[in-house]
Image 1 (tube, rainbow, N blue to C red):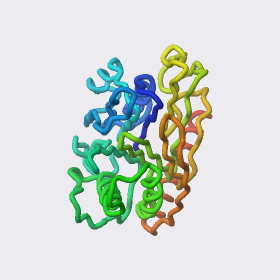
Image 2: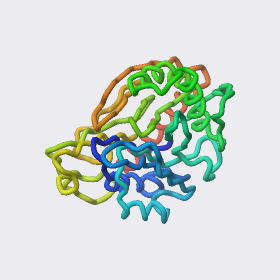
Image 3: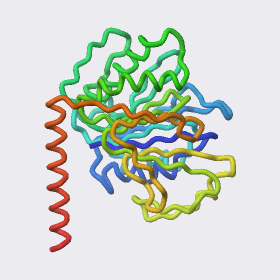
Image 4: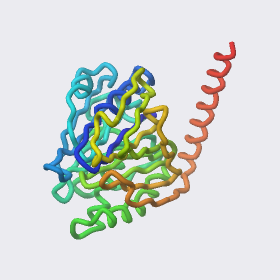
Length: 296
């Protein structure tokens, strides 16, 4: 499976620290080596921007020269979406690298997905068409199509969240649908299986990265007015109070805090339920093998 990383911030902030650890999961500390990507919404002063600076690479994040450049080039943003890929649907090509971007209502939208969808073949009849061959990009195009149909004018974040809560179960019933979505105004996160977040604000603690042998005092990087929410598939640090999201939970983060929370359950179709059971069996077998290896 792939892994997700997102940030929503009160003031423009850099994701360099979190991305440094996260990128190691792209082939170094984990096996997600089939491409990666990151999108930053450029801030307009202290206001969230509507244009995104977008980087994708089909090389692994742990070895990519572009990823190396971003670790040393802090881009300050209100909203960031990043992804490291383990290919399940679609070849290892640039067009299949997340996050995906599209324009709607005069703003860029950015989407990244972790999971796989079975028998998901929606009808696309608008201007949103996939470029690659992933189920993730197909889901993104359908979401934007239905959002556009549901509102005659630009909706508020609260209105968008209510519409998403109606649309997401129609996709989630087809399988695992962990995703991050942003239009520069908010960061939406939906959990089918694994997704968690942490709120960072004054007084900032010292943190120990999970994927790097590194300890960082966040107060050296932030001021009293800074506040961010970091959302990720698995915790990036070993000593922070990460909040695990519930299955079916949809969160909207604005201004560096959780704004709204909805739980939208979906009943899996037979093919998706069978695939989920197979994944659980495979994970249990891996865990048993690791335990046996450790015991030996």
